[in-house]
Image (cartoon, rainbow, N blue to C red):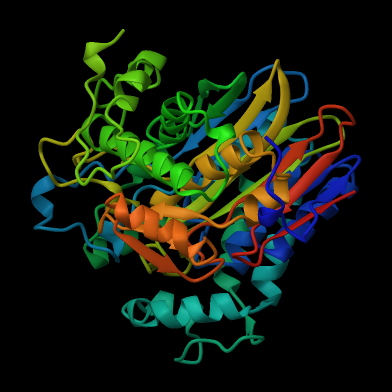
Length: 532
């Protein structure tokens, strides 16, 4: 089906013959492009960009965050998944929490995985040293970077929480107040930590000065990190999960990422003739929202850290299970409560970066501290902001995602690739917490069901189903008659501003006929895509 002209965009995608990189910040994309132009490959470019964005956009990610990536070397048929999510400190127990895991502070943080992922990716597939890749980030941390308006607002919003911790206030409230847009934010302690990593490798982070500083801070501030928690950490290198959608192979992050939700949504949707329905119609929005509800119900019931639970992931991603879930969807009425399926019966803020180089190496990468400014805790003397991934755990003893010391929570972070007959067509990812897999579901459908070009697929209006309120949120660009139709079907519709910021998709397509690299970036954020 060709795209309805009503939903086309005036923004063309960026097209390059040789290489392309997209990220959520112009300075990160520019640093990655410089790496590509100087002879570095896609893996070098993404790690360079990831380190820069940890400095210039600290609210969405930092050195104390986590990473997931799909890496496809030009010589390989299938990508490799990197899972750099860290576990909770082993010494913590469920009894250490009352009714809630704290949103900020040391006990909100898991072991950071990003640094190990940076080194692992470069060691396995990169062509440049860690020192060279971190060079631009070190320069920005030491010399300072002008604060953009979004970051200034994020710091102001997090200001009361940041002010609770002296090192956090020193890093982000240096004058005692949030920085103004355009003012220079310097992070000299972070520059020193990045230099230690650059020349000492990841071990300098997990067993060197940073680890020592974190353990000291834990002893003083009521945390639970020990030298063993950090020294024992390594990221996982795993095969990706996969599903097939209308002849396309879609690859995703393995558990404990929630990437399987994208695949389950596509599996359920495959049984509906989406391409015969107009994009933006009540029929399309209703069916996709109901697919989402079914998949998310299965997440709550069946999924946790696979190192701690036997997760029936193969059955959850099977076509027979998808058919079972599809039968529960009423084509004209919204479900108010969706129960999980029975697989035994069948056989907060983030940054996304993608790159493809001239040789055909490809990587889609996502990095995060979870909610805005994560734990709001900067480890004293290091400049490193810790994540608050502990908030991803459940405190319900019956949940497969229940907290336990040394365990990893379910992660919202995920990245995807789409192939046809072993030819890579599309790679991308999106920040946005629970909305990530909903966004990825929509942009893939926009391209392959509704015939949109890559930039139009990202620019198109979006819907989201809110797990907490049950509302179906619609950007206020859909036809008012469609909203009325959805309400008549039983959806609780909440209108959101056009181009709202619940997610920010990025990615690269490859033209199967010409080989051109086609990049696109979301107008909902200040991302940038560049190529040559």
